[in-house]
Image 1 (tube, rainbow, N blue to C red):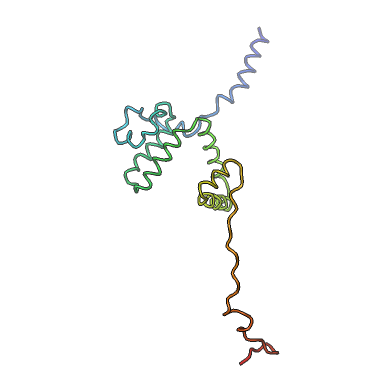
Image 2: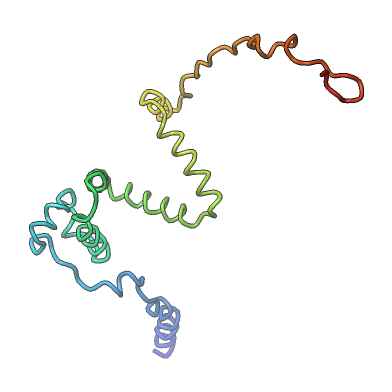
Length: 174
């Protein structure tokens, strides 16, 4: 019996640090957020792409989306369209895809500013590609080679005959 009690005591001693771990700050700090049916009509309209996932969403994520919905009316129409597009993309993702996006975002946010600028520059280059080149890259192919215009002949105004010859001693002809 004493051996059994020592075993239980050892188990409790080893497990107690795991119980002492506090939940993440986001979970602690976020009070319960409204269910979908409790949202105002305006909030439901703005957050419509998230209707399917709303009631299963964590409170801190609901709070984030409610903050976006609260700022929505003050946004320019172009920004509103972008928010709607991104919400639709987010709603279409699987939980695994969302986890990957979150992980990538976290990794990106921890990069030094120079590396962020480099990635931003590459993204801008990619964004400016024609759709067919983007499709090639997604398939793992190289984009179509750029056709470069041939170099033109030097204009007569800059031909060697029109440039004054140097005189010895570094002076030019007068």
